[in-house]
Length: 374
Ligand SMILES: NC(=O)c1ccc[n+]([C@@H]2O[C@H](COP(=O)([O-])OP(=O)(O)OC[C@H]3O[C@@H](n4cnc5c(N)ncnc54)[C@H](OP(=O)(O)O)[C@@H]3O)[C@@H](O)[C@H]2O)c1
Image 1 (cartoon, rainbow, N blue to C red):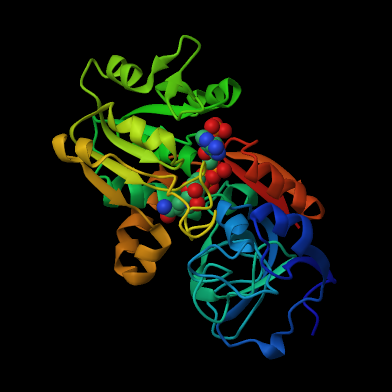
Image 2: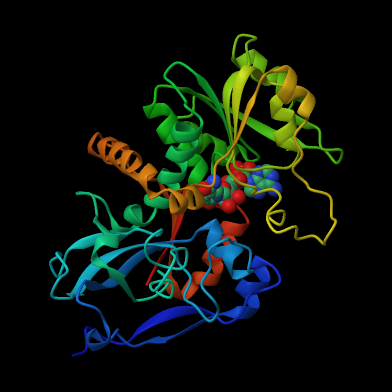
């Protein structure tokens, strides 16, 4: 029995040399027949995808740079929201239910049988227990921008960073999907947020989303980081904004020269969270050539003399290794959602413009989540 009309899905044919190479040369759209229920399990569900977030990891994965990956050809799209159009006899969900897929349990970043069901498609299949209800009042776009970004922000700021009310957190890459989620959660935790970024327009949006202070940063060719128009050093700006004390926590989703520069503006005993490498995306697998210098180097003298905690924060890896860390995280997020937390969707594209959406994500053109709609 057909579950709907012929749809469309994206396919990564082979890993690209780089994310953009994959987008331009290895990614195509093709017709997608609706999944055949006769081939599915009793707890499986067919979801008509309404929205899927364009993730940084989608781009890295398309170039073969991620720890858990589907093998090409595969359909990318780590996070989706949609409507149930068929359920197996043992799936406790109603047809028509609005759902969010858990990208750690289904889709390209999951481990196991559901890796091939990415969100850049008209249809996806997931086990019923990998689907959560879309919060009441949310659009599918908002739902697709929720779990990946907010679970990351929680894992980094709370589980690893122990951010507490009254503390000050410096958030690099604050205009991005995970960075803006970190701004939202840090405010809910009662912290003061100093957000950095390169674009005044995007920083104005980040301030409107809750950041207490924004710093427009600039890296000179020698890697020195200055702030604003008068070239104030990052250290001086951080000391000025914290009454000379220094920040308590750094959430670093950017990497490169800003990482080391940040350590000069933290207090004794601060926590430094390694979240990602938006500025140096090829370091994960030593891309740039074997023996290439690591672009992300932290000064051990400052770590030692300031008694710093440097904390790696790989949310998906940590959760796959110890799934028990997730319950508290999801419960806290659900509580904040009930209190009014809503993801910020910065741009939406039709699935037919997926390549443009991926380019926009890679070029950091959008504040918050980027979404494609099949
Ligand atoms: N730890 C985890 O579990 C986890 C989970 C998800 C993602 N990540 C990582 O976190 C990072 C951010 O992901 P995302 O989805 O938030 O990405 P995103 O939406 O593209 O945001 C990244 C932000 O970083 C800034 N940025 C980009 N290139 C830069 C450069 N060359 N120099 C300085 N700033 C730059 C941009 O802000 P401005 O343009 O405003 O400067 C941009 O908004 C990625 O490295 C990703 O792999 C980690």
